[in-house]
Image (tube, rainbow, N blue to C red):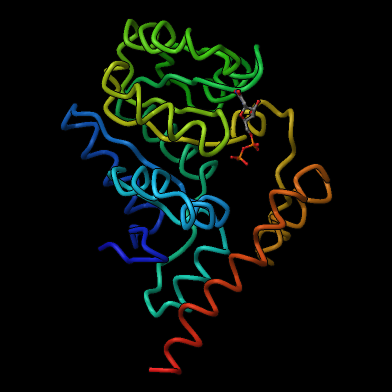
Length: 245
Ligand code: UDP
C-alpha cells in the first residue's frame, strides 16, 4: 500500500516487506528504482516539480528516517517503520548472498566502495560482488560509468552519490546499466567501510540519529535546517487544515 505525504507516494512497508518486494523486482529482471526518501528531499520537492516527478517515477519509496515516519502518522497515514538507506542496503546484501544475486557498488571517494565491498564479503560469505566504482566522475563520463556497470551484469546496484544526485543518476542511467534494482544509499558506503561511524544503537532507539550526525559533521547544519521547516509544513498541512475542515 502507498500513502501520500505532501504529494509524494511512500510505500507503507516494513524492512522485511521491502526486501520481499525487491526480490520480486530482481526476479522480474526489469529495471526498478528504489528511493529511500528523507525530509530534506520531500521538503525540496514541494518547490521543485521535477524532484516530485522523479519521486513519482520511482517503483518503491521507503520512509528514510524518523521524520518521515512521524509525518506519515500526523498525516493520518502511518507507515510501519523507518527503512533507511543503510539498513535496506545491509539487509539486501545479506539476501543477495543467500539468493546468489550479484551487487555493484557505485559511489563515494576512490577506494571506499572497494572497502565496503570487502567488508560485505567478509560479513556475507558467498556474496557475488560484480564490481565497484567511485562516485567522483564528470557528467561527460556518466555514460561510460553506466556502461562499466552494464558489463558486469549486476542484479542490485547501490548508488552512493548523496541525495538527490544519486536519484537523478539512477533516473537517467538505470536502463543502460541493465541492473534490475538500483537504490540510492547516500553516505552508506562510508559507514560500511568504517570511514564514518553510525550513531550507537541506543541513540537510534531514541530517534536521535540526526542529532548524532549533526554533532559529528557540523557542516550538515545547513541541510538539517530544513527539518524544522519540514515539521512546520506537516503540522500546517495536516493538523491545522484537518481542524479547519
Ligand atoms: N559523493 C560521491 N560523488 C559526489 C558527491 C558525493 O560519490 O559527486 C559521495 C560522498 O563521498 C558520500 C556520499 O556521496 O559518500 C554522500 O553522503 P551524504 O552523507 O552527504 O549523503 P546523504 O546520505 O545525506 O544523502
